[in-house]
Image 1 (cartoon, one colour):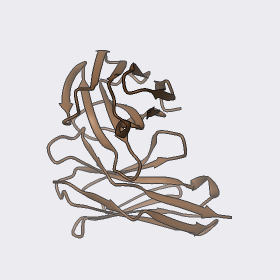
Image 2 (tube, rainbow over the protein chains, first blue to last red; image 1 turned 135 degrees about the vertical axis):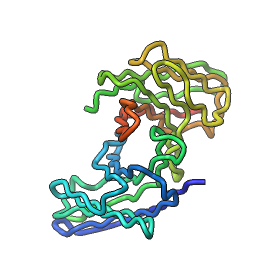
Image 3 (cartoon, rainbow over the protein chains, first blue to last red; image 1 turned 135 degrees about the horizontal axis):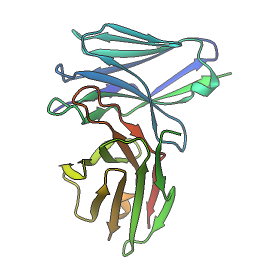
Image 4 (tube, rainbow over the protein chains, first blue to last red; image 1 turned 90 degrees about the horizontal axis):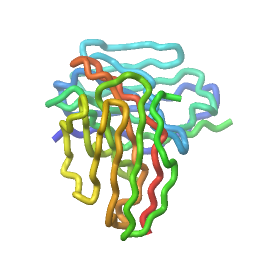
Length: 112
Length: 114
């Protein structure tokens, strides 16, 4: 079955760049997503990338997709303390576009 | 504020109680979802409704009973739950257009079963 894997924890200093990595198994995924979850809140969509793209940039966020290696990354430039949260990678299910397969999440801690 | 609200935000119940979780979306979407988020486990999809019809039941125990009276409202009825059902229950909605189907999440209900 499909599987999405992420490292559990990342700590960076404020002002540095953060890179959160994700690997997935379903090569037929049409879209791949990054969600952010702050404490006590639901998931907030940050960005998504279509599978025929290699890169997508949105302000401080850069998404890189390597389809050959099934590797997705999220780079946050100039990381701020407000970026501290859990970041989830998700891929669309091979059988239906509305089903998302989520990773376990990467907890990002930004140190002042 | 994502346009998806959930009530209550916190719920403590005994194993013999019956309670309901409510979700409402103000986005004009046609698809609604229930997810379970447990500690140290990936987000688990429970149910999907599209235009009020259930299109997905991800092998969820019958002690969880969903209800979707219209495209804007979704309920999760709970009865005779177990302590391992304690989790954050998230509702989401999307506009199913057959392409990118961005899901918008509510803040969740933190459920504790004693």
